[in-house]
Image (cartoon, rainbow, N blue to C red):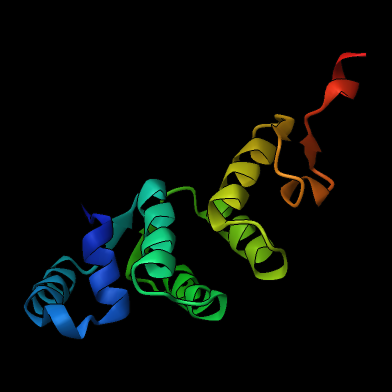
Length: 134
């Protein structure tokens, strides 16, 4: 099995019209490989690139992530964490990367602290403040 970097995954997901030669190479690689490993950091970077470089809205990002989730072609690192993060991302307002962090913490029974007030609205996330030290 091969692994791919973010730039290849994005080319595949977006079918970027400005980089058709790279899209064709990426598709040929996938066809030859038949299964592709997607590291967790590539998952995070992909969301960032789709949002920032391609201006994808949340619905479009969710569509891309669900494609990764359901396609037998892609083998996701920490798939259970990805699935949990995706479900939470779909119904809440923090970044996908925050939900991957939370998913990892929950899986490993770690309390997660943050200064992000929106993120701390989740019952599993604690807002760090002075009260924790009194």
